View 1 (spheres, rainbow, N blue to C red):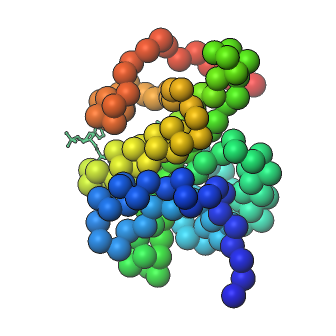
View 2 (cartoon, helix red, strand yellow; view 1 turned 45 degrees about the vertical axis):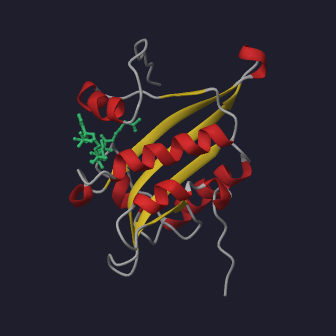
View 3 (cartoon, rainbow, N blue to C red; view 1 turned 30 degrees about the horizontal axis):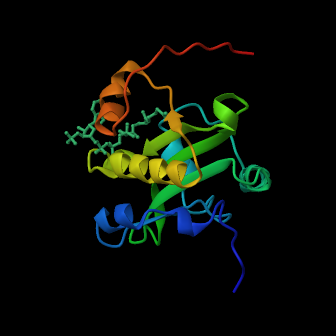
Length: 170
Ligand code: ACO
């Protein structure tokens, strides 16, 4: 049996959130074999992806793995879907600061639930799972950017509107 690295330690996965998932669904860290489990298919509806081969995906996974303690990609898998496929994914990125007495701040990125599973509370559960990780790794707060259409979703997840997003493309 081959060893499949996970992006972070499974002990950071919330047992409470796992208990609330539909029967059989598994909340877990992203694994090195998840290209084949449809990880990109979940992200495809969120934003432009481009052509990404398995090799490219795996190189990015390995890069994230080396940034020990920075990238936490959690996924929800439905084992009964086509032999086991990811149906939701979200990233917590952890920033180490000088400010706030060397504070640690979380950033939520790339949250997506596959189309036919939206509206079944998987998104809010995934956010609770990412918040749980943030708390466990010592974040004093977590922030995110989203479109106006999605603000209501994040309010349901316990987030409050603060400030405004700025961007600069290169
Ligand atoms: N606006 C307002 N409320 C919403 C929205 C929305 N866009 N989406 C869901 N909700 C509400 C639901 O009605 C539900 O309310 P209730 O508890 O009163 O019944 C609650 O939020 C929880 O909804 P879920 O069923 O958990 O939502 P879902 O599983 O569909 O996940 C998500 C929401 C992630 C936005 C999903 O629809 C999706 O993947 N959309 C496409 C990709 C996307 O836009 N991702 C967010 C990008 S922003 C970022 O990544 C930081």
